[in-house]
Image (tube, rainbow, N blue to C red; front, side, top):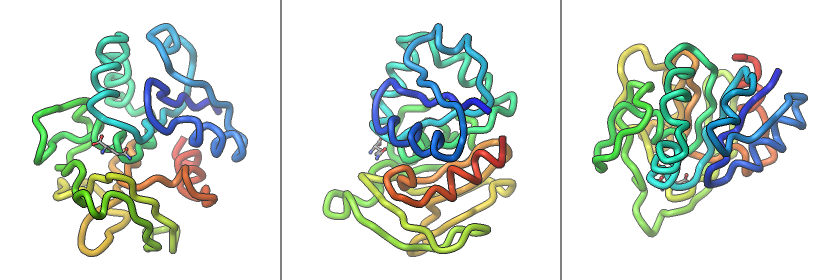
Length: 186
Ligand code: GLN
């Protein structure tokens, strides 16, 4: 199976390496023509959501990616990727794909807790190393959204149909069980 990793900005290389280790074919989406290639799954990496959103529109990639997600393409979104998917942002006027019916708070842990590590439970997977970097969290979810993980009462990972999204960075650890779950979705 082939996975396309959005590579306009942010931590995309690590996702590709992890997916290749699990046996997937991977290529990077850098420009509109890359969307003409066939792919079975999409990764939206961490980084800066405002920059990614702006580049997606400027590069002419936004509409087609949104359509693919709406039509059921499996997506793995981490951190800024979660912000791109969210239907609502509670502390920002930006809106991007709006395909995931959740409300997300950007940079939700403030400056002092900008980056931290937590070992928490992910439903169906078990204990997981979670690396948070200027992370968002999910303030509320629609009732069809399945909550996969919470850290101190805040939702940090969800699944909704074809979309698997989390506020931490599984690609920055050695644990590839989330990427494996994503490949299983494909
Ligand atoms: N703070 C970033 C944003 O709001 C997300 C951080 C990340 O992806 N690690 O877009």
